[in-house]
Image (cartoon, rainbow, N blue to C red; front, top):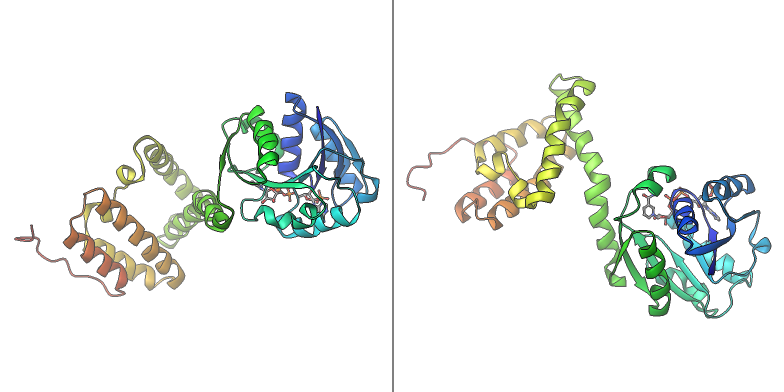
Length: 302
Ligand SMILES: NC(=O)c1ccc[n+]([C@@H]2O[C@H](COP(=O)([O-])OP(=O)(O)OC[C@H]3O[C@@H](n4cnc5c(N)ncnc54)[C@H](OP(=O)(O)O)[C@@H]3O)[C@@H](O)[C@H]2O)c1
């Protein structure tokens, strides 16, 4: 069994460490974080390994996981390389979706096989992530031999691993940010709108719950186009224009958000054949306008 050392063992490092230990995929060696105390907590959570207080205390390993915050991956890897801990053909990988595996250049320069495997998953806490990890998709790129080993390791704990182009990583990761982080931001935006309309947040959250859940279910059952309902899907330019004007008068930043998302919704409805070219163009116009739009007669339009 290969030995895995972990540098940075918060939510992702701990969850993966425990999953690999239980599945008998890796033998966990040394665990390093910013303090010996948190490394000890991580080792307790993982149920294996040895907490260390510095790189100098770390023993050899076949595989090195760097699961620090993104902005210290390069520095952590450079410190690891400078400490002389890497031997040729060691595998060094990180789990960031936004960072390319080339951030591990210092390890590659010492002969390591470097890669990145990014779980498309939210890890609000390690315990929950362990329970819900099976079924997670992971975007991977880097050295093919490293990916062969890491792909098997992630698949052994229930993941599906697919390849991504290194140059596409920022956009690839933005996809996850839109779907996950911005979904939370979008619901917050809806709460603010309700609050502005005089509905208390707690009541609003309750009222929005069935709407959001049904929409999410519909997206994954029928696709985003079929799940789209409301004024844009109906081609109702007057409602869209009036709504935009009201938001403009309240919060310009949220009006910009309404416009941007509205234009995506128009494309979606048009591609699905629910808006003809004339309606789609009128909606795009309405989304560009800041003044209320007067409803126009539809007679003779089609
Ligand atoms: N959270 C997610 O939903 C998610 C999903 C997919 C991928 N990821 C990726 O997973 C990686 C880790 O994220 P996370 O959410 O697990 O972060 P986290 O919970 O904040 O944990 C970060 C860990 O790194 C340690 N650390 C920070 N600076 C360090 C340094 N200079 N040297 C050694 N250890 C250091 C921290 O030490 P202390 O414990 O002492 O603070 C902590 O153990 C990131 O690359 C992130 O992009 C996260």
